[in-house]
Every structure is written in structure tokens, then in C-alpha cells.
Length: 137
Image (tube, rainbow, N blue to C red; front, side, top):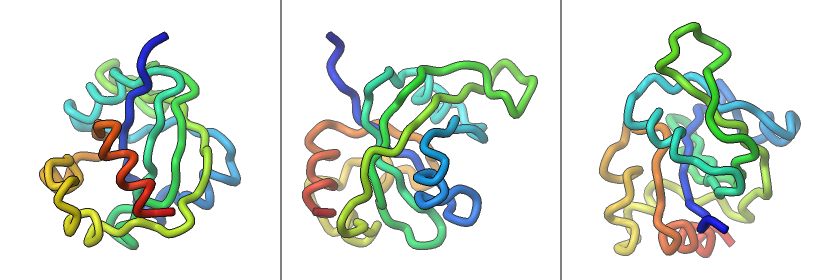
């Protein structure tokens, strides 16, 4: 069996919030128009775990999702360059973990959230994922 990979995806709460995601129960992750983020979507495998981050407002990791369908053509565009994956919510963090908390944690200094603020889909190492979960519990 393939090893679980870990990711972080960002969404602006007014566009697509964690609450709305939980109501929907599943969604395709669309609107990615950055090649690096797109390549990250293509690397996601079914069963991978994903942190859900509210960007712009809030700036908090608020929950955990999982990949329930691997990449396919983004249905919101005819451009074959762009893909989506399907995600489903797993659970909310007891305490949202803020960008400030993440930046203040030395073991998270290298994550893309800190280093590449504009990237909307990014990989995390297992220990980074676990650390953020620990901070949110």
C-alpha cells in the first residue's frame, strides 16, 4: 500500500468555508490556476490527508480532509491544463491553528505556507502535519 501523503489547501472563507464544506460532505477542489499547485493536485492520491486552511480572513488551519478521488479535468474550464481532486471533510480541529502560531513554531519554518505565501496547494511532511494537528488539539 502506498504511504499516505500530507497536504495543505487554502480557501478564502467567503468563497468556500470549512462550514460549507462540512455541509456539502464532499467537493471538487477547483480554481487552481498555478502550475506548482496544479502539479501538487496531480500528485495527490486517494486516502491522502489534507489540512484545510482559511486564507485572507482568519488565516487558520481549521480542519482535516481527505482525498476521495484523484485528479481529473477541472469541470469549470475547458482548458486541459487544469485539474481538480475530490475532497471530503474528516474532522474539525478543536482549536484553529493560526498562521502566527505556525510561523512561531521552529519545526514548521520550512513549510510552503511560510515560504510561499501565494501557493494554494502544498505538500507537508508527516511530522509537519502531525505538529499542526498537535497544536490544534
